Image (cartoon, rainbow, N blue to C red; front, side, top):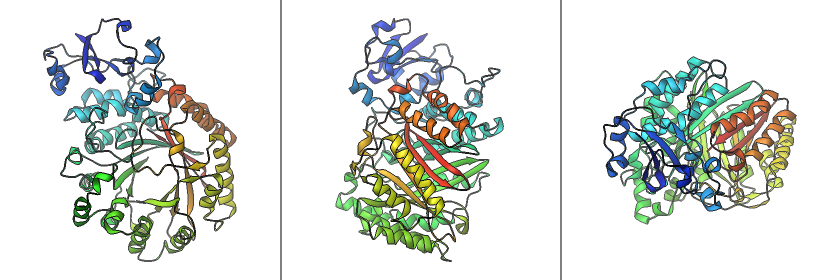
Length: 508
């Protein structure tokens, strides 16, 4: 027997019901399930409606419908703004195939044999692994690498993504990453090709309870698991930095006692990012906001002190001195917010200082890129010319952005999100290398994609230009890119003579 489940209303309808009988405002949330014993047992909605658990087994999620294709009634703006990215990111209804010989792809083969231990992990795999599989294939990873990274995701990352996000589960822990809850896929575009990246905040269901409201415990567990794998990973910097910029037990108690935790909707203190570059490079991101509230020490000072404390040889001191000098001279609307490093041997790592620019205009962006004209070498100025190009193409609006301390929501307009930068400091280098992050959440995704195609064409990245829009559309096969505003959440840009233009697209 086949049923249509309207998740937003927890309704169950016979599969042979004509679509014309289904409310037009509901069709974007329709999923048709062919149910099995496993899925019935795992999903309490079936028991609530008295569906027997002996239905004949078959596969899950064989069809989805969108209001744009089945409803004659235009979707209301309020519904469109309420739609989450989880609907946009659903996997394809059909098996992924290679195109030439229609052979099943690694995601499909693995899905036949992976039996994840609970329903939340099953949801994470079903709803996000198809996109990861497409990214790996489109970035020309070989078949062995695709299996390698999909297995890594299923077995060692999904267990640290916590409960599957659902707008009806309002008490779940909120990650600062937004979009796909604690998960963010991204893709690097360079003249040498493309690579896949993944950012996530390690978490478990315990962060949604009173026992770990600041989500402090999962990070160490995730890193310890990675350490047991065949991954190049050095945890020395993690052990040195974690208490420098994140809460101790005593500091968390201080915030509880002052009632300050309730005022912080985003309590994220750490993220991990993985670069899939033949092996896996692990990067640690630390957010000192809560530490700053507990100690009274400004975020920037916590970060600068942390770098100096682990820099035994002074290898980062020249770049760090220049950055500190610059921030002493600018307004509070330009502020350091978090820090990252590669988890490799300390003498080989890179530190990145991330800055939010709230007073957005091209003059402030130029100042940030050049650190107030402290860096004006040819390489930096070549990159700046491309920043101006992208700024104009994205039609960035000047103005003061909202200093919101909450995760982003679907439907957030583009003009409330600050511009982001990072300043990368390398051992022995006398000045940092800048990167800019254009916030494209709230912009029409097709318009953003056209900007990217034109930019790639202008700078000789013709292969990227030819495939960009088709690849992007494949991530949301049941949506029109012209109706999406949250798929391409950020576009980052940096430049060096060695790499040329270096673009990263972050998907929510």
